[in-house]
Length: 191
Image (cartoon, rainbow, N blue to C red; front, top):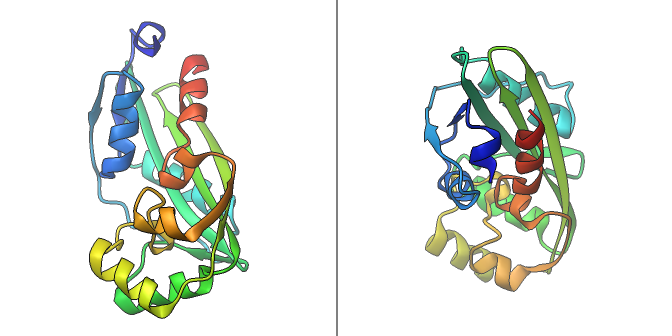
């Protein structure tokens, strides 16, 4: 379906995330993966989706798309108590993040930037996630077994913790996994 709409374009997913790559495969679109190292530093005056918009655009600007290419970049953070939680630095950082999320509601924010040689478009999705209380033993078990050090907020909703600790989500499940697929589809259809 989408391949027909985009037949004159080549899609390039600029993400090493296996979850984002799987979502793109499930959209039944042809794409290639192209990675560039980008230092993910943003001005400390930015808040919430300003951070993810900035980082998605920063990643997109690292590429010079050919005339027939659409570069797709994204960035996800957990926004909790007026603070961005990205990927944890280590075990202790991950433990502290999960301890702070336990029994509370936070937001998962993902921004996506679509960039061609002619234009650029950035959009975002916000999903509210409420965690049940978690014991130190449960957090330790999860961190030791799943090692979620490549995930914003130190957790993957599709893993054990999502089954036992998440009481409620309001919004896109796919967004919490790492890509608001419905919005990506809609924006690509009209890009």
